[in-house]
Amino acid sequence: MTETDFILKDFSLENITNGSITWKTPSNIALVKYWGKQEPQIPENASISFTLDTCFTLTTLEYRKLNAERSHNFEIYFEGGKKEDFKPKIVTFFKRIEQYVPFLTEFEFVIKSENSFPHSSGIASSASGMGALALCVMSLEKAINPTMTNEYFNKKVSFLARLGSGSACRSIEGPLIVWGNHPEIEGSSDLFGVKFPYKIHDNFKNYQDTILLVDEGEKQVSSTVGHQLMYNHPFAKQRFQQANSNISKISKVLQSGDLPAFIAIVESEALSLHAMMMTSNPYFILMKPNTLKIINEIWDFRVQTNSNICFTLDAGANVHVLFPEKEKETVNNFIKSNLIQFCQENHYICDSIGNGAISIFNSAE
Ligand code: PMV
Image 1 (cartoon, rainbow, N blue to C red):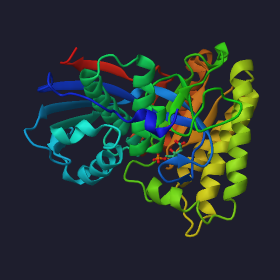
Image 2 (cartoon, rainbow, N blue to C red):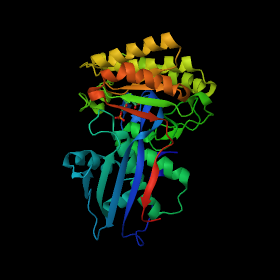
Image 3 (cartoon, protein in one colour):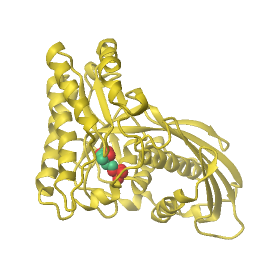
Image 4 (cartoon, rainbow, N blue to C red):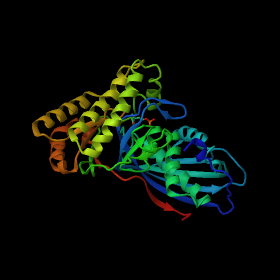
């Protein structure tokens, strides 16, 4: 599919007046990371992520048809209060997607959003937030064009979400999503995320992700700036090759159930992402001393107990602790006794792999 397949043409708004749509959309955590992109939000390498479950954004889009066209007519409320500083990002998103959803200018909107995870916990909310908004916009398109297939709906949601935040295109479905064209992943595309197309080994069913909140607060460097720093990065070319080669490896591992190989790829990916940050110009460090203490504790525990526990990192100091469901009890005990002390105010979130976004309300259905 190409970009032009996502342009809505010849539509009529005759039967549409006003209504309300609500979607619950999860966050996701990349196993092979995306860091570096080209315009318009085209990734430099393929990435793969676990869709999460407990960490989600709940977004309601109230729409009312206007008598005359007007651009970007919306109000945004976040967790009950008007949020003016969220507006520029949404205006940019609306401008980017307008050519694909031209009906947007014929409505006024009220967007109401809330997160399940604590506000400014350092967990990236752009993936779940932009994913949820893209779903609401597409439900409105479905009300206008009810004959659309589910497959097209999901692809176009992911396509639109990508234009809001790259990783958001991996938050629509689950449990494992690949984004970025890769010769060994059938159906993969730079334009949208696709479900991992091969059978996943039972070892990865209901995989656990306990998120240790080491540093709650705004990110010191935005991901927009971080991606840009890959343009003149001395190791960019090797990094993109490494990530694509890790996609080939992890694809086999996810099918064979080889947990030691999974751990080696996932931890190397997390450290490579941070190594890119530490070797860019300007350079920066997002890990905190407690991030390293947690990593060392995890490594010690793995050696001592033969556990399959491992870690990954996002663009921040928080640690995602990944482990198979059958180790839930022992690993959770270890987390409580040894790791929680390194979290800000002892905050952590127990999450696991999820199956993607859920429609909560749609007045047009
Ligand atoms: O979605 P963005 O543009 O905010 O980029 C986020 C990239 C990482 O979260 C650091 C890695 C990834 O693949 O999710």
